[in-house]
Length: 211
Image (cartoon, rainbow, N blue to C red):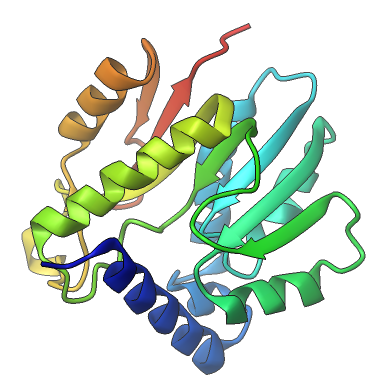
């Protein structure tokens, strides 16, 4: 049986290796380009649309690339990122040392709830973990996101509607209908499924506070 600790250890090792190979770049967190990375951030940050001010948690923050994009929204008052890779957190702290609004820590969950919680790409690379334990890992992480996003949370995942000939065995492709239903029935009646921004993935927004 694959334990949560086994999965966390494998993830941390994988991304530390990617960082050593590619540095603090989109490639270092397994994205193809800066443009697609920013597009994903744009979808995730829609969770805070209309908020006059908000604080933000990020799970799987990597080297902190989201901070710069989120910082363009002057309504963001503080940011806290966590990552399983200590190497990623060291890099994030170095890159954002001058940002007094941003803090980083090694771990699988933030230090306290904030208004919103987001995660980008953390459900994609399952390495050699089988379907059932990886889906269990995803659902456990959604529980954490719900706990640490008091006004809502947002995440993305590769879609099962991807072209079969391009799907890789080391990646996990979620059924967007099943994930939407899980979030709608468990967390909030206010759930949005975004599957129209040109990538082989989808984004879920779960809003608890719609004011």
